[in-house]
Length: 380
Image: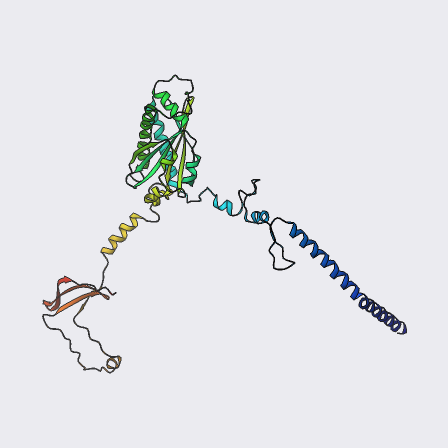
């Protein structure tokens, strides 16, 4: 017990000495810390004064971002191309449009490919193979900017839908069609002369081919919805072939046409606004889908409704009485009906008035002769 008391006294003396040392050096340490912070703030002020743009801050500890740091946070490009796909700039420049998929439109384009293979063989008297490369959704303005020139753009109108579409024929297909129709040699590539406008003969031959393609497109849509695609005009400048706003979404089908060693690309653009009248039909998963409707059940339900038995009430008169008078009614009391022999009688089914007629007698029973349909007063 004596040893423990001596240890406690020694520990207490040691803690007291440490506390005394801290108190003694507290003033010196505080002065050193204040001097160090003052020197750091002096260096920061010197750096800010050396910048080209003056810093605006509310206090000495506030950090000011320069223009490069602000641009990097917002996602703007700094010239290196690293910020093209991030931040606000990526949202503004987004070209892909995430629209709903139209399953039946793929069926229509598949029918178009098969029909075009036969029609173009008859049109060119050559072995023609048509294939569908891709179907995609994008903005109309982005598509116009991506068209490789020179090219011919055929503007057509869907008569029943009262809107327009675009058919783009690239330079390779134009020269191939002209070469085939004018008797070019087989096995040689079509001659391309770039840098000159298309001649009248070339425009007329391409226009004839566009008429054939539009005829097949109308036939491809016939099982879904009859429509007539009428050729409007042929343009070589995409700026004059604008049929929709640049921000509007459109469907683009890219077709590849091969004629042995010649050929080219044909692109069909249909805005979503043009397809809006048949949007519900294009959303079907298969031809003839009714979206939950069953014609057999509808006919059966209609037949059963006609055979349903209902109760009819012939109302001679109606009176409004207080609840107290109704409760005070006793056996032997009389209710006077304000109805004469020639007064009209209303026939109801539940609370719905159906007919109005005259009261009479048939044999030993009271009968109602229907004279007119009852008018239902619509409440405002």
